[in-house]
Image 1 (cartoon, rainbow, N blue to C red):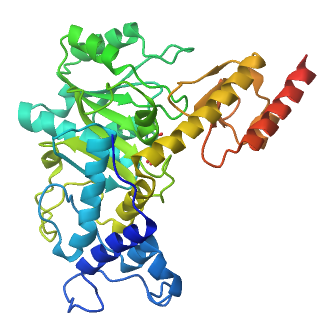
Image 2 (image 1 turned 90 degrees about the horizontal axis):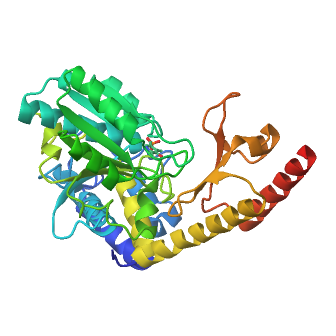
Length: 413
Ligand SMILES: *Cc1c(COP(=O)(O)O)cnc(C)c1O
């Protein structure tokens, strides 16, 4: 995994050159597009700070990234910033997920939800087109700890979903529940499976054991394709783990979701969908006649500034800088865990993720409220509360939490 870090100067140059290659509504005779720069009364383009602010300049120039730019020729008006998005997709697929010499497709989606829906939609179309399957013969398989965008996608796409159980303590998918799911699907005529693995769940930071689960599926002689939901873990887990199981070196993996607007602290609107070549085509909307290069995405028009934002963050840090930042968060999380160990407080934590999920019996409602700890279920049913050790979670804040926790545990005794 390696990509270079760029200076602010270099980033400004790349973005400003990209904007120059894009169509400028002020300079070109643009009569046919239902689009323009941002409203000039509100977003004036001669604000003095803009020359040093590549993201804001892009926002104001308002490039449209409609379509998929890794695939074919797209809207000539915005080729400059399309190129930045292509580089971003390439960095994610080849460097974060060890794509090697292979080429990949992908785009910047509105978020992890859209990227997951896109993935399931594409695999559904794959089975429909290549195997002449009907929707009843395709099922989506995921664990009870998977993100709620999975049931959302299944309802939207008219697909049956089968949900495996996890062990309450280890959060690992149980083999019995997987066998049970496969048995019921066979009885209801399912022939093909879209299998979702979480490369970190949102609530626990648990990572599905992909090798074990695909091994079970192979033993059951099931036909499946795997999509990885890395919306939470995508910018953390690959930087901490030694394992290659969650990379494109694993031939079982078809596609990934990533979310810039979680760990990477990019603006909302920066989900990323990545897939091996040959799959994006299944999402083609042939009828998208007014879009040059047609459309292969769920969303339609989308802001090019989002791709620029994610690219800028990745280029500012470089791979080494980003790894160092994530390792710092990991150490802070380690320290929190040993502090909890000293107190005999039980929690779940994956050592390669910065989430600590504490059993609710140690957390009073007052404490949860004061520190905005997120429960696994709202109301009175919470069994767990999580702490996410993000950038803003300073050691002093964790220390204050621990002091308050001590006081609560003391009064209980
Ligand atoms: C946040 C998250 C999503 C959904 O992402 P949005 O960007 O909110 O749409 C999907 N999966 C996981 C694991 C997540 O953590």
